[in-house]
Amino acid sequence: MDFLEGMLQRDKDEFTRICNRLLSNCFLCKGNPVSRSDYYFVLKYKEKFSEYLSLLGYRLEINEEYGVVQLTNPQNYNRYNLKLYESVILLILRILYDEKKRELSVSDEVIINVGDIHDKFLSLKIRDKMIDKTTLRNALSVFRRFQIIETLDKDLGKEDSRIIIFDSILMAIRVEDIKQAYDKLENYRKGTKEDEETDESEAD
Image (cartoon, rainbow, N blue to C red; front, side):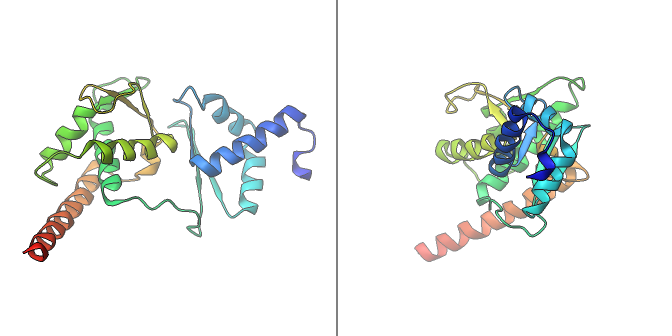
């Protein structure tokens, strides 16, 4: 790769590793200690990353205000299609992020707990019962992989288990205002109710 000429070998190795990480994880967050050095490495060589990744059909997006690097694909290749409840939980995380952020200073981490997710889910009346533990655990695992969250406690079955929401959620869910997130959830609520009514009628 001619455009890597002049880089030290260790930087070339880092370049390769981080490209693969972006292709797998989509986001790099300055606020995540695990990926902070990778974030700054991308900033250092952003032209080279953009050039290389564009050859693969990807667009490198860097938001220094949020401290987030995101990889997108204009042709919609290699997209991860969220399941219904993954979409619902992601929107709830976006709303909780916005609510918590208002209470914090700019540099503070946004930390919620599992109980916050359940409370918001119930308050929105998407269903009359809480999200089951397996569904929630699987969804959070997906968002952790994509560096949207990090879990601080191992047992996510407990209401007080803590979760950090990274600023990458602002790029994962790009809504101009939080009302749009609520509108999306309202559509999901209607769809879920209709599905339940269909299931009940079929069971009869």
